[in-house]
Image 1 (cartoon, helix red, strand yellow):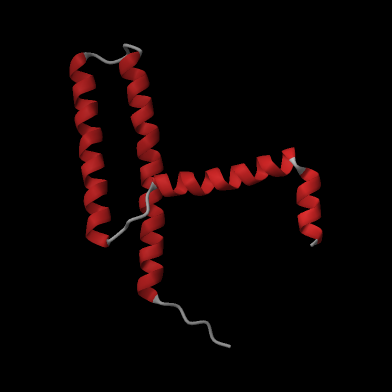
Image 2: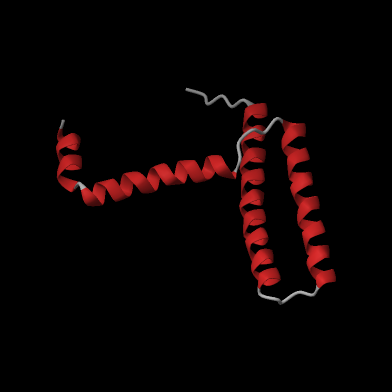
Length: 104
């Protein structure tokens, strides 16, 4: 049985993944920038340049998502991970119930 792949769907999926990973990195950069600014590690000019660069990055990411019709985001990734973590925690807290459900 041959495998059929929709090339456009595959490209969109890969681009969505790349954009999501870039957003994760962007969030880390934002947090690190705030830490450095709040910690007094940056002078006013450095802080302003950093803020401008992060704003430009945010705008560029938004434009890429708009240009390619990408609606998923890091928030979607977080929600998915939260659901996985909730299930794992629930299994640890209620192992008997999970065992009973698995037997059904």
